[in-house]
Amino acid sequence: MTTIDWDAAADSFDHEPDHGLLDPAVRNAWARRMETWLPTARSAVLDLGCGTGSLALLAAGQGHRVTAVDRSPRMAARARAKLAGTGAEVLVGDAARPPVGPRRFDVILARHVVWLLPDPEAALRHWSLLLRPGGRLVLIEGVWGGTGLSAARLTALLAPFAERIHHEPLSGDARLWGKEVDDDRYALVARAEPPHRHTEVVDVHLLLRRGPEVLLARRASTGYADGLLHAPSGHAEDGEDVREAVIREAAEEIGVELDPDELRVALVMQHRGPGGDPRMGWFFEAEYDPERPPRNAEPEKCSELAWYRLDALPDDMVAYCRAGLDGYRAGERFLIHWHQDGDTVAHDPGRIARAVPLPVSAVPAAQLPHIGPRVPDLAEAEAD
Image 1 (cartoon, one colour):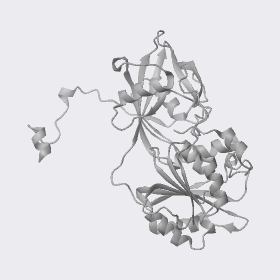
Image 2 (cartoon, one colour):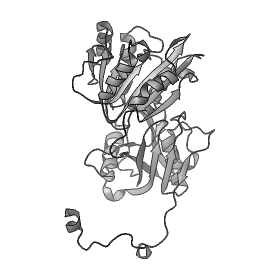
Image 3 (spheres, one colour):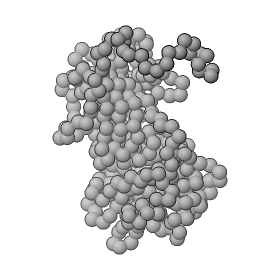
Image 4 (spheres, rainbow, N blue to C red):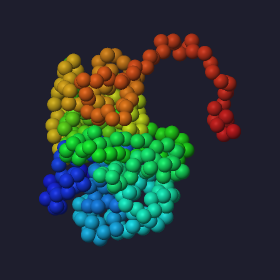
């Protein structure tokens, strides 16, 4: 995940009320929405009509590979300066026919662009050809004072090119705009075609125990869930098993070198963020060793480490992590935690948790019925 220097961004550009996202509350609100709209895995994102690159910067900050396009050389220059150091590419060109050659993308993102195009249907048809299998269009539009593009009209335009379309109203969330609005603003997330095979990101979480306490880290300057507490965590990378992943994350985030035999599986949870894709989370437990005290090894992403009692957890936590810890305390081993669209990424103590425990079979393995044909030679069967 790329760390963004937002103070530098704010100092470098003119104020653009909701497009510049210079207000931390507005920026955080958009970051949370973006996290649900974009894939959980690192993906190629094409931001069309990028303006000064504010949404492109959020996507880059969440770890995605970003290509941004704007027809104005002045806007493209500002976006290029804003995105410096993120690895993003900024091109000058027409959003309807972006100059990306034969490249294909996992996501095409456009904010307040489609309604301005002379032939939106042709543009959408071309954009759909730029998506990889399973890719998605993320379109943010609205109707303001009688001008713009209604959600019903844009949904109809997308229908020939989309497998399914998710409509998300945005007008009611004043945090996105820095004020209350009374017009119609929305996002459509359209899947161009289903992936050939379902895949899920695997993430890992460390529950470092010190007696009745657990170590939590406060996220900062990441563009997602900043200010909220979460256990040390991360994603399994290619070629890693889940133990290797949690050992690596513990070393990178809290400077603790763990051995595999110190880890115990605490909980496995399938989770879906608001409007996002499912992921599989492995929670591991390990005991605190006073000879290896944890430290904040990533101060650019974490503002503090602190110990909290498991029976008195704070409310300002990422909902996913809080649900896992609550299930762990209750003795659960398998959970499904499924956000509904419109839920917050933050734990909301005023709402009933949607973590559903899955029962573990108590039947001894020797008593389980055999299902399917017996294969005496598995290697030979696989070769066939």
